[in-house]
Structure formats: structure tokens, C-alpha cells
Image 1: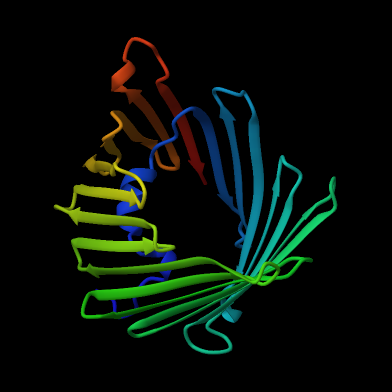
Image 2: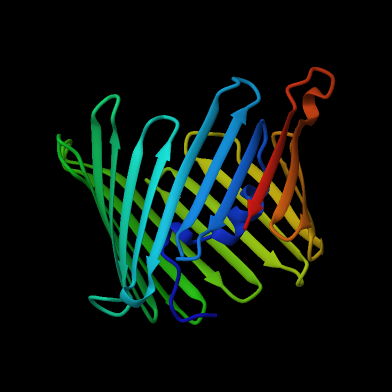
Length: 284
């Protein structure tokens, strides 16, 4: 395992990817990624919600000045929101990344800005974000320490306008090359556990439990991903609420990938309410 632990938001990412990636219930989605000769990357995305019929799209451009560790990106969505991000990494200090993120909605005039920072070295990974608001900025900070596979992290957020602590989270776990396990407590009332196991080069499995104080039930789900070959993969997940998710991904040729997914409510097989999804990815 790498000596540098992941940042707090990435603790348990391998497990969450098993449940999240490859599924697109209730929507038809199209993603197109291209790259110009000068290194500018273009990402065009569009999705249509099957229930509401609402179509959402975005256009993003990204350019990296590798010699200076600078990345510039701009994004424009069909909600008429323009976002600009400037990131500088490993320039002021080794392991330090600084980001400035600003957004503007021309139709409403609403503006927002955020400064993000991350610092990583052996055995530690810290972040600090400031979200500016006219009423008062919101501050979020986190720190993760790791040693020989063991990791412990803390995350807090403070709203200066309300003089209130809005997040108070703690996580502890163990990471290895093929096995991860985490437990976390959010705001002293929400508890979760994550287990991830890379069984072999083709098969991954994960389990997740969530419980909130005051509730008599625990949410539970298990899932897996299996790579049939280098071009084909299947996913499956099931929860204790009797929802079954299935996904099939096929690489048709270089740069073209299609994903079919469905969610089945096994308690209401004859009443409907099931969801299907289609995703197309093009890359050139």
C-alpha cells in the first residue's frame, strides 16, 4: 500500500464504486470525450430523466500546463451555470494542491466562490476548504493519518454565518492491497460500515451497513463487479429493502462503450416501479 493515505472523502471509495459506478437507473445518458492536438480536453455530457423527461447537459473544457502544475477547466450547463476551476499542484510545496472554484448564473446573477487546499505526505493527508457566501463563509477541514494500513480521519465543517458546527465526522479503518474495511460516525448519530474485497483480478465484492440513532432498522446492501473479459463487465447489488440492481457494460470497440442497467423492486414485481437505464460513452 502507498504510504500516503487517501483524503477523508475518499475513504471507502473502492466500496462505494462497487455500488455506484456502472449504474444509471431511470435515465438515458451520453458522454463524449475528445482531446485536441494541443492537449485541450473536451467533455460533453447529456442525460434525460425517464420519469420527468427533463434533459440536462454540460460542456466542459480542460487544459493542463504540466510544466507548471496548473490545470484550467471551464464548464457550462443547460441550467445556465458557468463554472471555472484553477488548480495548482506541487508548485508552492511538494504535496500541496490549491484550487480556486467560481461559478456564475447569468440569468439570476448568483455567484459563488470556493478555495480548496490539500496537503499530502507520507502517513498524512489534510484538506481545507472555504466556501464564500455574502452572509458568511463556510469552512470545512479534514485530516487523515495512516500507518501500515491503519487509517483514522476526522472531518468538520463550520458555518460562520450561523456560528454553528454543521459537520462532525470520524472514520477509522484498515486498507490493504485486496481488502478494505471502514467504520464511520457522522454527527454522532449516523453510523456506517464498509467492507471491500478484491477477490481476484476479475472479481470485486463489497458490503455496506448504515444505521441512524432513533431508528430500529439497519440499511444493508451487498454488491459485486465481475470482469468477464477486458471488454465486458457485469455488476449486481441487492439491498435489504428488496431492491436489486443489475448492470452490463460492453466495450463495442476502442472508444465506444455501452452500459445497460436496471433496478427491480422484488416486493412489487407485478405493480411496476422498476427502472432501466442506458449509457453511451464515446472517447477519441
